[in-house]
Image 1 (cartoon, rainbow, N blue to C red):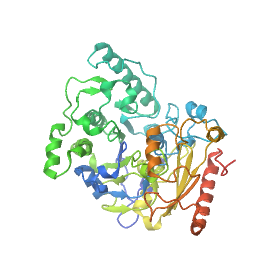
Image 2: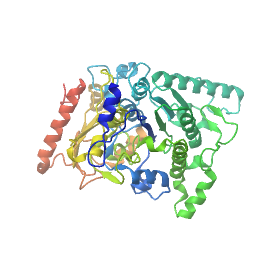
Image 3: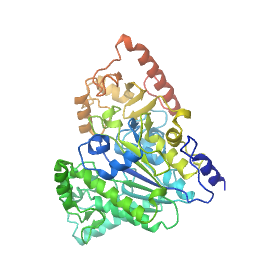
Image 4: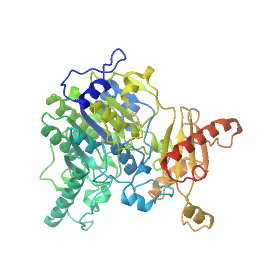
Length: 504
């Protein structure tokens, strides 16, 4: 009864500025979180791309579009960790992260954060509050060891098939132990992480089938489903459309899956729309989402389902940095009849806000041990005039931290003592990138940002959205620099770790 009371109060009626109202005993809403991979705005029509994405465009058009949405950490693993836990990645307390970033030392956020059994996350909390919880697609936040096989082995080899089936079973079991009732069609990480050449191809239909199977088995229980696609990550997704549709990390399928519009129709539809065939992967993803929505509608569930769409990071010359090219991503919310239609929100939102939003919609309270760094988006959407919202947001990755307000962004590059010593002694062996891994991405960011190595960077995002001109030494911007440095210091003090002169 206590949970229901908060639910009725927290989502009270919308149209007159008051919260949404639900009758006593009403079925709690379903939540569908579509988390895409490396997707930039140019692969979505609703964000200005010349592509064919009618389903996603309609959801965005009928929902709430966020134009200033960020991931706090701009590579796959920490971004996904944040989406699952609602907290900054540097708060991670798993053994691997603490071994690589011991307490009392500067954290180096990258691919070292994990979501493990025993910890609190959105799946576990919702499951303990009566939700059916499901996960399909790319996990990439910790996984059990895999049984190896030769990189050039064939999926049609019975022994390889046995190994892949066992690896999939282990990963599914791991995700269930983390907190999900259901896991299927799961990738442990990037396609190359499966260490098998034949698996370096996307299979959107396989992910879609996992989602459809979950929806079909939920019955009367409200559900939370995260659909984490491998699209649009490398290898070049367009090439996979013409690949073998029976190849999956779980083994070789008996035949192609008939769960969404056939791949063979994509080229013709693009031609009819006057769109380049090179953008077919955007339509392929959209077709999968359309199939999932059709399933929800057929089961009478769509109107009681909140849909959250987000990409884990961008790739516009800033992935693995605090620059907007990696940290700023497309995002929207849709809930027919429950959230306003056709709203464009320019407030600063971040993926730390997603778990609080999901809990608010579901009417559950997180356990006291689960620290949430964000805020629910529901009050901002339903009653923006009366809702106090953040004026600054915080970013972190590798050896950099950043804070931005409505106009400016300050980026601080501070290396830990060992790295700084290697730089001074010329023994580092490579340029001092913002991250120590994914160095090809760092090279791309380095080429696109002239002040990449500057310790202090200040950008006017209104006049310089590509972050080309560092204003940190401009005396006319001294007050803006001092303000943002002060705010960054306040933020960092809450992590209990040193960072340059900001926190000793």
